[in-house]
Image (cartoon, rainbow, N blue to C red):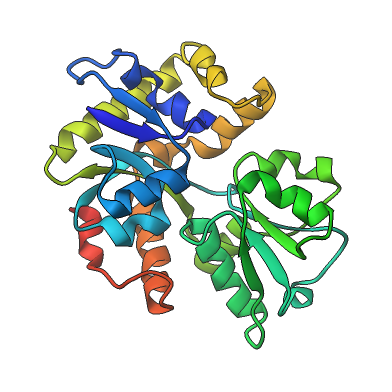
Length: 276
């Protein structure tokens, strides 16, 4: 079975057992390591592997062809994207100013749009898409007025002497009471989604039961990340929603995507397809 997921510690931790033939009855995997922007694009073009990790924000574009697998993804609390600035600033200071984002097809971007509309409805910021690794230096050097960052930047932005204006995960939770949906596992609808769910869930369980087993695999792909940062990354993004979306998880996804569709950030789609 062909699968694509990122080299980030949470994905390699979750899929270690499945990728190494440790799940009884599961097929051999052909793994492609790809950042989520790449898998989002592959899925939208219909050119991707049978199973992929994509952003929940990309799901409306592919829901007719891919089923949402209710485990293996990334949702949670206290794990949202951050808006960073150089120096102390208020949200109103960003009206009409330039904000760097890593993608316009991401949950982070959706949350930023929701937040900006609430905070500065009269004059929204100008969006500049920029590679993730360039955003914090660009904010530090004054090339943009603020930056939207994700993943390990939560743990490293202080190294650039930057300030956190807003934790959009906290903002979303206060606004909705729901966890924040980040990354989704999808599978082509021609496959047996129940079997894939069973295998992925077993891989999650194995990861938790044998945390030392995946350590070398995680660090091999951790892109020069320190062990402490990699472990913090796993602790933040691998949680009960990784094992099972459950009602709260599905409600969070439905709330995020229905709101995005209402505001024309994503195309309208049949919400019931998220559960089938």
